[in-house]
Length: 247
Image 1: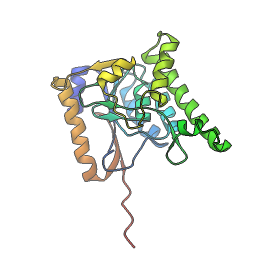
Image 2 (image 1 turned 90 degrees about the vertical axis):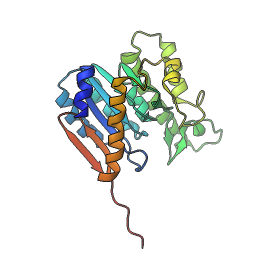
Image 3 (image 1 turned 60 degrees about the vertical axis):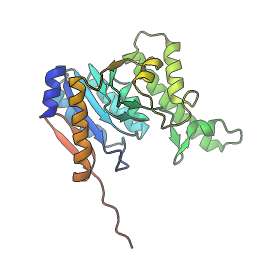
């Protein structure tokens, strides 16, 4: 089993949270914590690498995922073979480092509200609806507070608070990245000040990680899976609901 091959190299438990981002709209949601707990229980407090691929999702659910990771995997690295965008990037901030290579991509974490409007756009409107303004402010504050807490207590523990605030400001607003889909590669992530474990694509470990990720990308559409949670001890899948037949 490829997961065991990777674990033999790293001497760490490998947990996988894979989302078929190319073929489904599956995202981080309220059911993920239950499936993640199964994987974390199997790791039994050992050093953990969480391999993740996701386009993001709900911030409330992301808070729960980060809380579980912090409590049940105190020695955590997050591995990003391809992309961990939006709140996927927030989850990556929960690790002591982010393992990246040439194919890896993080993204801005600025929240979107009201069906897809960037919160910052509403906050900058002089005549914004008061309720919409409160929704946008709450979403922005929630995201910034979560990212700041994760960095202060983990990856960047001991670093100057102003430095951490500057990183969060770049990630959580449009002061640095105009598009929510902007690609933050390993070079950019390091320049932001994040702790990146940098592997070349030709590295034997990375080749195995990339092969595992490619296998999930191939198998999930064939099995109609939207998300897959897997370790060497457990595997759980969330199926994609079939499209309604045309009238």
